[in-house]
Amino acid sequence: MRGEELKGHLDALLLAALEDGPRHGYAVIEALRQATGGQLDMATGTVYPALRRLERAGLITGSWSVVAGRRRREYQLTAAGAETLDGRRSAWRDFAAMINSVLEGRPWPNPA
Amino acid sequence: MAESGMIADYLTTLSAQLPAPVVEELADGLDQTCQRYLNQGLPPAAAARAAITEFGDPDVILASFTRLSPARHAARRLLASGPVVGGCWAIALITGRAWSWPIPVAARALFGIALASAIGLLARAAFGTRYRSIRRAGTAGCAGITALDTTMLVTTAIIIPAVAWPAILAMAASAARVTFITRILRPVLQG
Image 1: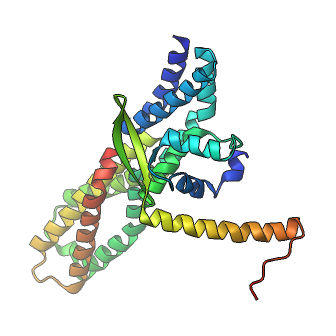
Image 2 (image 1 turned 60 degrees about the horizontal axis):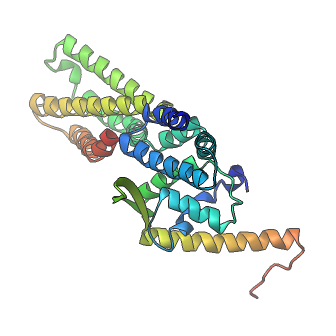
Image 3 (image 1 turned 90 degrees about the vertical axis):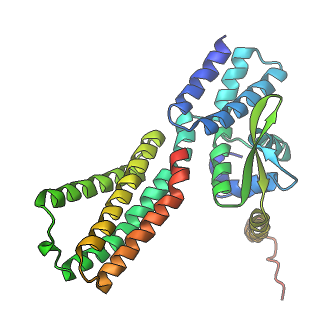
């Protein structure tokens, strides 16, 4: 998947990558790469400003730690971040169901 | 070594604009990306090239961080709230017949020049494209506005014999702005 197609979804992907516990920037990128089977084609350098943006929004917190004598910034999901991730997941399911109903002729899931 | 030279050049481009902690984090990520390619069996120069390509155009990374600049956000908020504070002072000065206050013309002119300079600096910070100059202009603009607000607060308190409600409102607006700048100054200075 190309970077442009990810626009609007990157925040949710980063929050999801931090759901299992704290990770530093490179580990977040690796988690996304593994979760997508290496299909994610994006400039990984842009993940770092996106993480800072999420931190500023209070959705994740960042802290420095020292690993093998090197300072490394680690990020962790906040309660607000977890809540936002739930909301984004729910919105994505609805969106995907709507698109599928049109593209693949599947019936729209009508609760009534 | 060619590979370390390539990565050093890449990081130099970023460190020319971005704060040191941000560059430190990017350097760590780039180093790990390069290490992954080395582990996959690429020769050092090819691994460095692949890591840089994967990381992306430094201008794109700089632009992303520029959009996040605390100085830019502070400048935009000050520019947006400026007309409100300015309007309060305009009403206070007109109703207080400020033209009759014992303030030398040179001091009035100096204040006007300082105000125009501060607004210019904030505009540069709000709409600039280079991270470092945005930080410099934003810091100077914030300092200028603080000095001007303080001058107005002190001058009004000393000169106006009976402070009326428009002056109280204007002083409250300036005090609120100084408080806001004090709160955001640390992230602005840290970049």
